[in-house]
Amino acid sequence: MLWKRVATAAILVPVTVAVVLFAPLWLLAALVGVLILLALWEFFRLGVLAGFQGFVQWTTLCSLLVVLVQWQDDLAGGAKGSAGWMLGPPGAVAGGIQLVLILFLLGLGVSVSVTKLAASRRLAAAVASAGGLLLVALPLSYLVRIAGFPSGRRFLLLLFVVIWVGDTAAYFVGKGLGRLPMAPALSPKKTWEGAAANLLGSVLAGYLASPWLPIPALSVLGLAAVANLAGQAGDLLESAYKRSASVKDSGQLLPGHGGMLDRIDSLTLAAPMAWCYLWWFASTGRLR
Image 1 (tube, rainbow, N blue to C red):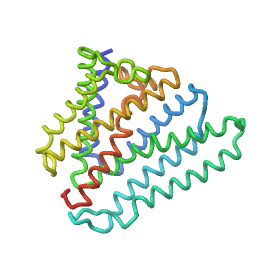
Image 2: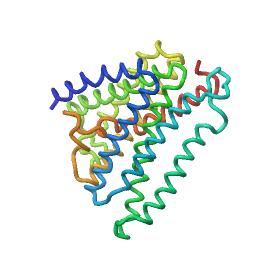
Image 3: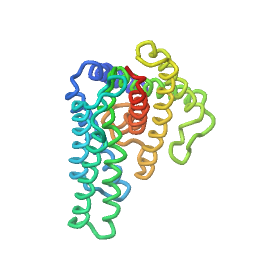
Image 4: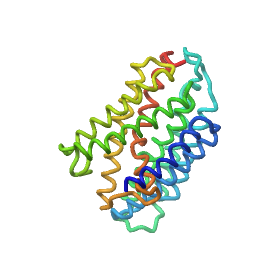
């Protein structure tokens, strides 16, 4: 199993680094869209195994619209913040996302009304669809938004690195020294020792990367810690999905890692939290 994990990582890591640092924004956004499609497919598969199904086509369409809006907002620019960064027109970012969410709700209402599903299953279908958009597509779309910050590609790479390093530290420390179960009802193998190693590994990665980033080292450590804690929460959230579906992995796409959702579950909460952290720095003129 370990050799499969290493082999898969040996392929994915350099590809991810190359895309993050060198791909044009439109290509990065398109690849995030593909990532979301794969994760959504697995999310809805887990839903079916758990006994309910969502409106897959409508959710998928609105998820791609979310990515498009995030990309367009990065391109649009607008009013300059105190650091000279293009913050966008007042309400532009929120407005774009809100329009997609309203459109999604309208379509969801129509879908619930006209579906051939039994009346007793329509609420579950609506909830599954909302979960796909709000728990998978929307948070992952903030990978595109992070890339739009000054030095955004570096911050985006930092986000991936702190997740990778933290996960690796948790795997080895948890397996070798883990004794105290962290969330046995959701993930029996996760331990508090592994969680602590996860956090420390991410903070160390942030410290080593801090000379490469345009904010103070202490702020980089804060970003690494925030992303890590949010990522660990995202990992547990995905474990809850799998428990509901009574499966070990969300899929078999990535040898040694399971499915795409297994690989990027940490990012579903880490990406929007990192964006909020960086947005605060940009809005106060501290990000140049």
